[in-house]
Each structure stands twice: as C-alpha cells, then as structure tokens.
Image (cartoon, rainbow, N blue to C red; front, side, top):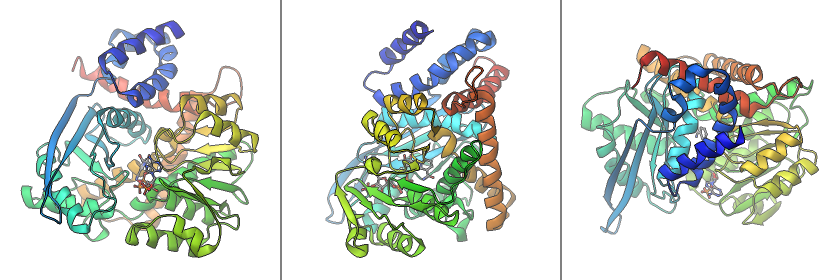
Length: 447
Ligand code: NDP
C-alpha cells in the first residue's frame, strides 16, 4: 500500500511543484483513502481521487490600490474553486503575507472534505491575497477590499461560490467586500457569509468555529467517560477561533490558560475568565494590538516568539495557523499528560506530530472535523438568506451542536481502527468526507 501511495504522491508533486502544504494535505487524505478505494473499485475505476486533487478552476488576479500616502500598491488575489459536486463552492478568504497558490490549494482541498462532513450542500473553495491588514488604516483596508472585490465579483454568486472569512478577514473586511459587491452588481444577496447581523448575517456565526471545536472535543471526551469540566486547556492564536474557543471552555467549566499571536504567547495559570476575554476582544478586534499587552495588564508571563505547547495541559486547542505543532511539541504535550487535541486551525499539526498523537492513542481531532462548525454555520446563514428569515441564537446554537455531534458520529463510524476500540479521527473524517463527494461525482459522469 505504501508503494502505491508513494507513486500517487510522486505524480502529485511533479504536477504541483513548490506547493509543500498542498502535498502535505493530499498525502494525509490519500493515506486514509487509498486502502478504502482499493476495497471499493468503483471509485478507483472512475479516477475519483485523481480528479479531486485537480481544482475545477483557479483564478488569479492583480489587486491594485492606493495607500494613504497616495502610492500605488499591488497585491495578488486568488480564488480556488476546488469541487462543486455537492453544492456551490464555499470557503474562506485569507489575507496574510504568507498566502500563495499552494497554501490556498491545501485549504481548498481540506474544505471539500470538511464541507461534506457538515452534511450541508456545500462544495469546497478557498481564496485570499498576500495583503497584510496588520498596520494598515481602516481606509487602506477598505480600498484594498474594494479593489479585490471588483475582480472577484465576476466569479462568485449565491448559487456559484460563496466566500467567508479566515485569517485576516473578519467582520470589518466582510463588510467592505459585501458593500462593493452590492454596489457593482446592484443586488442584495447572500454572496458572502460572516455578514453583520443588520445586513443578513447569522447569530452565532462569529462564535461557530470556536464553539464547534469545543463541542467536538466534548463528544470525544464522552467516549472515555470524561468531560471538559475542570480541564486545563492551552489555546494558541488570539483571533476569531481562539477567542470563542476560550469563551465556550469557560462556559463549560474548563480553564483556558494561554493565548498567542505571531509575536509570542501569554500564560495565565489563573485562567482567562470572561472579563479577561473581554479585554482580549477589545485589544484584538478594536485596538488591533499585541497579545503581550495582556501580560502587562494581568501581570502574567509572556513568552516571546513561542507557541504554548510546553505548558502542561489536559487538552490543547491549536487555533492560529498551519504547522504550528511540530514533532517535539507533540512529544511534550503527550509527556505532560495531554489527553486530547482539538484543532481549531487548519492543519496545525505536522505529519510527524500527528503520528505522535495517534501512537500515544490520545483523542486527536483533525481540523477538517473539529473546526467544521464555522462553515456549517455559514451554511445555516445561506439557508436563512435564501428564506429571508432570521433564526434565534438558541436555534442556531442547537443546530451547530447537533451538526458537531453528527460529524463526530461519522468519524467514529469510519475511523475505528481494525478490531481495536481506538478511533482514528483522521481516517474517519477523510473517509466520511470522501464518500459523499465521490458518490455525487459518480452520479455526474466524467465532468
Ligand atoms: P484570525 O486572523 O482572526 O486570527 C489568527 C490568529 O493566529 C492571530 O492571533 C494571529 O496572530 C495568529 N497567527 C496567524 N498566522 C500566524 C503565524 N504564521 N504564526 C503565529 N501566529 C499566527 O484568524 P482565525 O481565528 O479566523 O483563523 C485561525 C485558524 O482557524 C486558521 O488556521 C483558519 O484557517 C482556521 N479556521 C478559521 C475559521 C473561521 O471561521 N474563522 C473556520 C475554520 C478554520 P497575528 O495577529 O499576530 O497575525
């Protein structure tokens, strides 16, 4: 089997040079899927996997804009329309200087499986730009978003492709993007999700990825007769996903003790309670400051240039970015007694780190399962927009919880390792996500 996987991967690497994150994401899926499709020849005959790794469409474009000094700036914009077998392309936009084609292809590929897992009718896509919102004025961010949407608008639509937020794209950016779309197309429609509550947004959408991740970990812990109550949790990042992960952990009686940004992390052994989280939200979402200021405010330790994986914890929630947990970090986490990892970020653990978690048989939730609550609630936002209705906070939260429980059940169904009781959530998520998309592709013929 490993020879077959290596041969498959050699072709992927040859066809997609210089895209290491895309290779990493494909390999992880292929390792789960190859044994499955060997037993299900219909998928192999129809070359479903070969088709799934080729985006249906890749759009790349120039984004020129004027900064506050009147100077012309040029960024590159992208939209990867990966797979539309089960619904319109759906997936976030990332604005970060590290953005390139390979990173967005990895994210779009992951998104196909994740969206399928939610049980909602959404295909997979991803997009963004190498634009860095950090240090830019609101006016500059608006100018950039308007230029970005001026091109993107011709490729998207409520039944075609529905982008959302991701790193560097929050409520402010979605507002500017939506405003420009509406102006250019003269239509008020659910073309983006993560919208403001006054103009088509859904309650719980900002909270959904973090809340959903915590709900998923709760389900995993239940399988071992445990709960989150009293658990010490390390969280990385301090953006959208991290903030609402901390909020839900606190609601459920757990104690979040760390947060980070790209400069370093804070360690607050007393726990980040509601009042301290309010400070973080103001700091990050309004003042756009650095997490170090938390340590100054609440007199706790700050570690420059580090991720929080050396801190002893029961559960870890990586919620910043890809490849933030390396092999050594994973070893430290396991050695320190960590019993579960819930990935809020996409692919935050390297393949070597994942192997450590699986070998140690801890509860390990890959991002495509545990962070699917965000896109699931985007799907609920699309449903509300189509019906021109608004559901209550409790209604959406209840639906989100049920979706996370369903995703967990699908992972358990497909992820039981041989005769053992251990659930390999990586295999579970990959196979469960694959089957629905693959069957739809079979139905559609060679397209
Ligand atoms: P935000 O932009 O709101 O926050 C990102 C956080 O991660 C910031 O604290 C940022 O620090 C930190 N970060 C980003 N890049 C790096 C890096 N290279 N090294 C160290 N720290 C970094 O993004 P989100 O919270 O929305 O997204 C976080 C993760 O969750 C991403 O992997 C995203 O793909 C994933 N995700 C998000 C969803 C959503 O609904 N928003 C849905 C599903 C997954 P700094 O401010 O210093 O850059």
